[in-house]
Structures are given as C-alpha cells and as structure tokens.
Image (cartoon, rainbow, N blue to C red; front, top):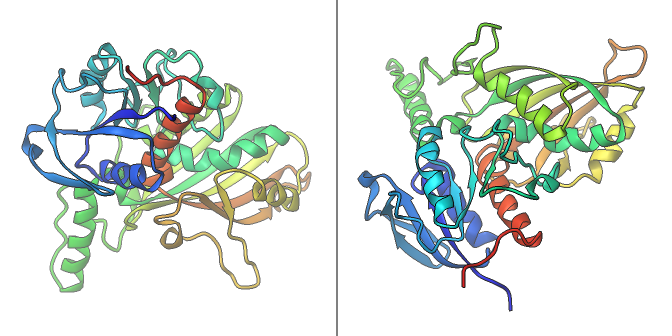
Length: 344
C-alpha cells in the first residue's frame, strides 16, 4: 500500500500557490489531508484542488501539526518566520523563496541536476530562483558531457515572477494604454505595458542586481563548481508567465551545435523547438502551461573559431518549472528516495 501524506501549502492564495493546487491534482500526489495556509485576510476563502474544495486557514506557528510536507511560497520573510515551526512540528519544507537558498546546510535542488543533494537534509529544501532553474535544466547535461567554462545569459523575465498583483497590473496597464490612458505603475517601478526594464531588484556595488547574483551563486552551488563563470543580464518584459533566456556557452573543449542538440534531445525536462526552415523557435506563449523547458536557436558561436562556443535560446513557464513544478518534483523525489516519512 502506498503511503499517503498530509500536505500544507504556505501562501496558497498567491500565483505559485494556485499552481501548487493544479499540480497536486494533475500529478495525483499521494495525499490525505491538504491544508491551505495564508494570511488572516484570506481566511475562509474557498480554493479548489481537483475534486476538493477547501477553505483557507490562517498561517500560524501552530498550523503545521500533523503535516508531513509543506510546499512554501509566501515570501522570504514569512518563510524565515514560519519554516522553523513547520520543522519543529515534524514536517519537511520545500521552500520556494530566497530565504534558505544559500544556507550551506540547506540543499538547493533541481531534480534533473542534483537530486543526490537531498540526502541528509535537515527538514528544509530550497527551490532555486526561477531564472536559474530554467537555465540549468538544459545546461547541466551539457556540463556533464563537456565541462562548461563560462555562460553569458540575458533573461527576458515574465511579470509572473513579481506575483499575481503584478500580472493584474500588466493587464490593466495594457488596457489603459490602448484606450489612451496613462499607465499607472503600483506593483512595479515603471510602466510594463509596451515596455521593458532592468530587473527590479536592488543593484549591488558590483553593478549586478540581486536576480543576476542569484543566478551566479545558485548555479555554482548546484553544480558544486565554484569555477564556473556566469554573467547574467536580467530584464523584465511585458509577458504574463513564461521566462525566456538567450544563453551563450563557452566549453573547455570544442563542441558542435549538432552534438549539443543531440545531448539535449535526450535530456530530462527539455523539449527541442529548433525549426530553422520554419523559423520556429522557443516562445513564451508556447512555453506557458508546459512542464519542459523549450530549447532552440542552437548554433555555433561564430565569434569562437576554436569551436568552443554554442548559442541557444530558452523559454520556460516561470510558475511551473520555474517555481511550483520544481518544488513538486522535489517532494516526489523525497518520497522516491525514502526521505519523507509519513506520520503514523
């Protein structure tokens, strides 16, 4: 008989929380109780997960009694406040915020990359940043076969990464601008309709924003390689929910574009969309609602006559693989590896 687990979603009313509800039903997660936790403002709100309709409960330090696994996406400060209580109650937490990602004692995991890092976890596993996840899913199998020396990545990040209210703001601004009204930014620092701007996280003294620094540090942690060089430029674009990335890879040895395509065709979590004749390549519209990262525009970097450079373009759903799906896959991997014990 398959064990079944009591699950809590922390931040159930947010954009990622909504995808957790979809995925728990879609993937038939072995679940008994499902507890939906959010702030007091949302208490009593009815949410649907498959055939279940459940009322949101208030997130408190006592809300985790009897819970086996917590899927958390309520913001970094909330995670720092409540995750210790969940662990004390005996739950394992998969946290989708930045709160624990760079903690040396906390595994940072993409299951296609480093599931072995789940071994010996101490009650919390960190979900990487969305832009990092979408990059490393295709980058890792290439790194395994031909060591990657350097990555230059430019991101085109959907507004879903800023939350449900920001998605609503993009829709509202678009309607306003098309009707001749002025855009009125509230959730975002600038007009996003018909515009793009540098990622709206704090710029550090080195000129990199927090989002870019996350991509550098998280890639090195998951690859267990402090020598890999990553230089990102992260940009917000007026797209609802799928990130795209232009990636230039420098290998330590010559690698052909055909070999890259062959490796990625067999890689888990990757779908090749690389139709040169039809000029059809990854698009955020086609990546939205899809689990895999779409990869195309695979071509030799002509600026490197030694054959060590390859370019590619990616699109991946920020709310699914970039957030909720990766967390769900971590939970499933914990079960498969015998690292999530149901309470008796």
